[in-house]
Image (cartoon, rainbow, N blue to C red; front, side, top):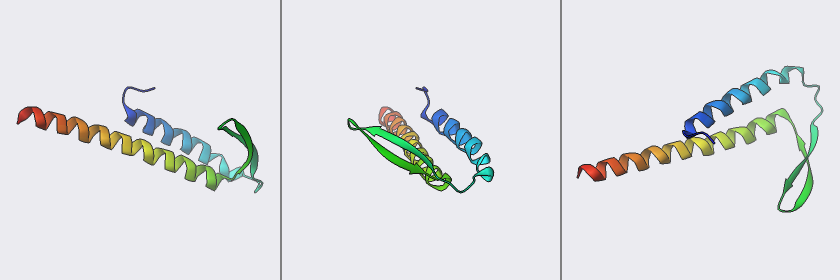
Length: 82
């Protein structure tokens, strides 16, 4: 885990763009896979658009984490100054 959550965002964006660069050769067939969780394994189908949406949602979560971290740090600093 990175000390700075913003590093996770940057790394995630870079990985996403690397994957997206390969999609020009996509043949139109979704990639079948499996999702593990809650003690079960479920089939799942991924298209580039779905993968990008999921990555986007995850990155938004990390951006929110960065924002909250900065707001909390600022609030603590302001509290010390008062």
